Length: 119
Image (tube, rainbow, N blue to C red; front, top):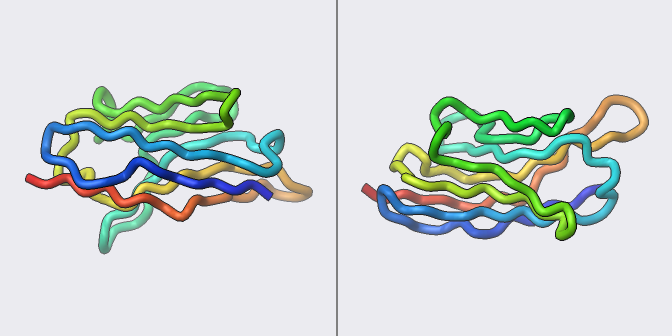
């Protein structure tokens, strides 16, 4: 099992910045990929940014140039630096880990952290 705990959300004005953190624990060695997703009210959960299995990064077009995903392997922590925030970035942000288990890989999710950008 892998446990994920997000932090760093909050209320910020348009143009502001926030940094989200996701602390992973448990069977860390079984994690194959990690990323950030978000879900706004009435919308489906969508990919924001991720480290792929190969270690490369992938970003949603809407956040390219504004958000940066990073990680500290020594601390087992994933980060999302969000700059130039817009009201449309308002959502609950979730940390995700793709975990190798016997059989198909499974997704582990954090509890989510609310990001609200005021206009």
